[in-house]
Structure formats: C-alpha cells, structure tokens
Amino acid sequence: MRQLQAAVVAAGLLPLAWLIQGAVRGTLGANPVETITHTTGGWALRLLLVTLAVTPLRRLFGWSALVPFRRTAGLLAFSYACLHFATYVALDLGFDLAAVVEDVAERPYITVGFTTFLLLVPLAATSTRAAVRRLGRRWVRLHRLVYVAAVGAVVHFLWLVKADLREPAIYAGIVASLLGARLWWWLSSRRASLAAHPEATSAER
Ligand code: HEM
Image (tube, rainbow, N blue to C red; front, side):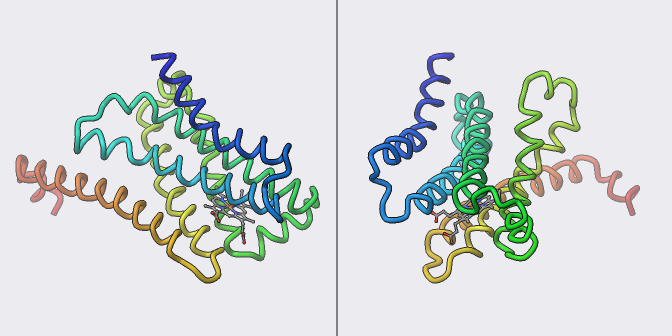
C-alpha cells in the first residue's frame, strides 16, 4: 500500500517536474509565468475533481480501493493551489502585497480564486488521522466545504476566460454531475427513511 501511495504521489508530482525541467531548459514558451499559472491552476482543479469523484466511483462501481488515495489527491490539489497562488504573488506581482490586496478586492475572478484557496486551507490542515478522530462528526461537516471549493474553482475559471468557454464548461459539467449525484443519493435516502418512519413526517408537520 505504501508503495502504491508513493506511486500516486510521484504521478501527481509529474506536472511539477515538467514545469521545473521546462524552467531550467527555458522551454515554457514565450510567457513562462503564464504557463506556470495555467499548469498549477489546472492541476489544482483536476485533482480537486479526482477527490470528489472517489465517493461516486465507490458507490457506482464498488471501487473502494480508491478511498485511501482521496486524501493524497486532496493534498496534491492543495499543493498545486499553493504553487498557483505563490506564482501569482511572487512571479506575476513581484511580492507587491498592496497589488495583491487590490486585485483580491477588485477583480472578481481573483476574489473567487482567493476565497476558494482559503476554503482549502482548513481542509488541508485537518487532513490528518488525528484531526479526523478529534473532530468526529464535525470533521465530516467541515469537509463538505470541498463542494463549495469545487464550485468556486470552476467559477474562477469560467470568469477568467475571455472567449472560448469550452474547457471551463467541461469542468463545470463534471462538478455539476459529481455534486448532482450526491444530491440525488441524499434525496433518495431521505425519501427511504421517511417511507420507513412516516410518523417522523407527521411529527415534523
Ligand atoms: C489563491 C488565489 C488565486 C489566484 C490569485 C489565482 C489567480 C489566477 C490567475 C491570475 C490565473 C490566470 C488568468 C489568465 O490567464 O488570465 C488563474 C488561472 C486559473 N486558476 Fe487560479 N487563482 C487562485 C486560486 C485558484 C484555485 C484555488 C484554483 C483551483 C482549485 C484555481 C484554478 C485556476 C484554473 C483552472 C485556471 C485556468 C488554467 C488554464 O487556463 O488552463 N485558481 N488563476
């Protein structure tokens, strides 16, 4: 299992390795900062979607073997989000913190990106087994923030794209399906439990 986890981490770090070798060799194109921003942002989003896909894949196809890799994918997503933010602060704005604050306050897609990033921080900080044990049911509630973060990430992408909306629209469709499946299961289990305990409905009324 440890070897498999290491292989997943290594695979997740391939885009970073590609960026590093491109930066060293000078093959990141005419605008390397843009390439780095797009690659890190893209992988933060894709890995976030991987974490959200684990539960539906388990429920639909019984792929429980994926569950231990959910946290790894989530932490990799957070790492790319940190690199994405760091690229923007350091390489794009040259550590001009006043410009960062101004952008966050005045450019809506940056506001959404930054909010999404902030939502990921408590999730990463409570991803340890000790935190899961300590927080109990509150951990489950807290980690529902990942749904908001996924929506935030696609809104950020949709908002920043100027002409061709196809790529962010595909991601929006994936997020809608992954969250829609959860909503469907939640409504079905609610209906089933109301059918099993009809007295609960009359009591609620
Ligand atoms: C920390 C705050 C964030 C800032 C300041 C930020 C900023 C940016 C900027 C400047 C761009 C490039 C815009 C352009 O080319 O016109 C970008 C692109 C992008 N960002 Fe962010 N972002 C943030 C957070 C996030 C987060 C948390 C995610 C995902 C989880 C994300 C996903 C993306 C994606 C998918 C793209 C487009 C990549 C592509 O064009 O292929 N961003 N972001």
